Length: 475
Ligand SMILES: [Zn+2]
Image 1: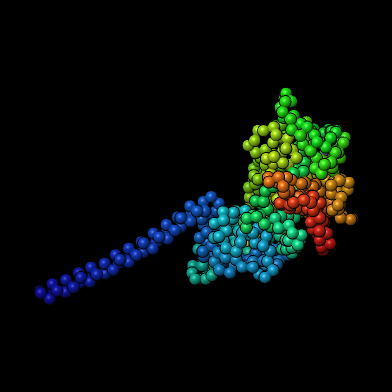
Image 2: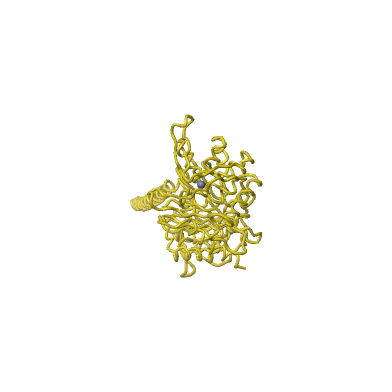
């Protein structure tokens, strides 16, 4: 009887001990899981503005896939979870910016990841991979590798342009080369400034390249304005109010006096500031603003891979002074490199903007064939007739106007030049934008040289000339 009691007591003690151990284990588990949950929650809050939190947690598990350029050169490959390494020593710094760096989490922390390749191609981090398939369930410890991506970028061209700019001392500059028929971006170089700056974020006054959009907006309103006549006195005065009490004087660049210009074509070739301000005044302000929205000014353009709202004509301003200066791309007017390249493309492509894109194809798993990325979004920026007449004006710029000094023999080119005054009143932004008119080489080139002391838009034109030479001689 006594023995039985003892046995029972020891049995109860054993159960109690086991229960205590289980209790401690559960407590430990709760702390660990709780912590993880809190961490995950903190990341969600951090990334909410720009990025799915799921991608961040994927970047801790998945090795990124491989990034190829358009010619199948391997540019970068996943070296550890969330991290990429360059394939060769000769790497393009500007391309690294465009891709978003080598570290996914760091890219998220800089806040710009959506406007980088990393942000545009979540497949790279295995976003579409399934961990619940048979193979994954039976091999829980296998390395997880994201899909591969093929870019539209020609890495050799990107390197060529980057070297060209550095050799010429243009350390703050940006250049975009794209196919204006398909929207494929061949090169997107941005040097200087903040280390995360790209063609999406580099902003500047469009200066006289604004005249392309002003000309299109005027012709959309009234085709007869192609024959609008204006006499430039060098320093031209415009009224800012109905009574004519307030006036502003705007001079033409380089101290030029253009005299009587009987057509828009002549004014475009000479880039007369007075002409384009007077021309814009022939269009009711609300119609001018409405037509400029089609070119992305003070509007939002929605594309498959990004949203664009970075071209400004007047912004929030209702100021008559800003209206006058906006017409020559100064005042409140600003564009990004890609924004300027986009309306250039539409003009060269019958008024139709093909969505600019950077990805040719990708796969969800590296062993699968790549799927082509089709870009369905197009945007009619102006009518075909208007686009073609502006394109012809840009041809004239190269033959008889401000583009003569960077024309390439035997190549039909259409460009517009621009020289923008920067905020400090000392330095300038030198610009050219345009393209090659050749069915086999339908490329546009936008060159922007920032913070230049002296020189003219021809400096930017000579960079474009080197790029044109390379593009037309390449097989
Ligand atoms: Zn003039």
